Length: 83
Image 1 (cartoon, rainbow, N blue to C red):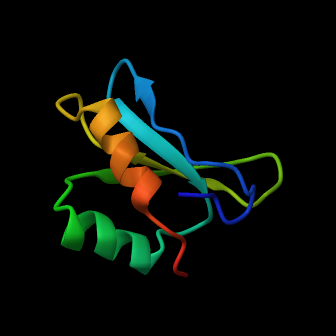
Image 2: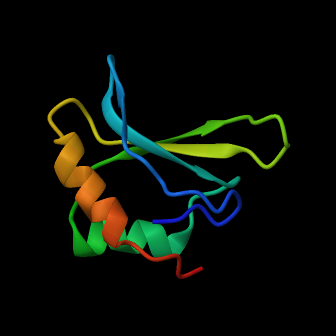
């Protein structure tokens, strides 16, 4: 997946506390992404809003410590921006 604001590839990172997560630009969760993560892949996750310097804001998608970073990255790489 490519971030619609930065134009950069979305990369799955690891939080020592919460496990794999990724960030995208935005103020609210896009419905199309929610439909893919929940409807197509049945992934449990939660979203946290994070301020950014440019004022656009960031959304962090956390998947929990049981999630596999490499498998999650493979899923994220298949997602195309549809919104």
